[in-house]
Length: 158
Image: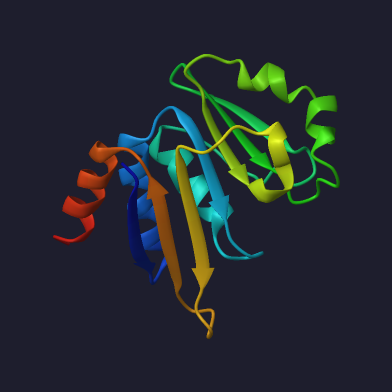
């Protein structure tokens, strides 16, 4: 079953709250982060990684394409495909080696540029800026009933 959940992100605290819920209920698999430049994909990723226990800076891997993390024994790979010209570049950089990591978590910003080289997502987060650019809306699409229950209980009862 496919679930969807929409959430207003009125400030960084809302983004941080979403990241904390995701960190508790999405620990393996593939996450796509979709949105325009400046929508908040990297901000959400930073809070997500910190919620998982990462200490220190989280930088966008715009130039390196991938930033690997090991947080409390968990392998996490943050990809930013914005500067990718051709999906085949991922093959040349050895993406298969990353994707073969067991029980890992993969975060993809700009997944549309990855073509068939990247796996299908378990979770899609689309962040859209409002017209005045002061607020954001996060639209989540996923198949986890546990994640759906966590999002509903956390945000609909807040």
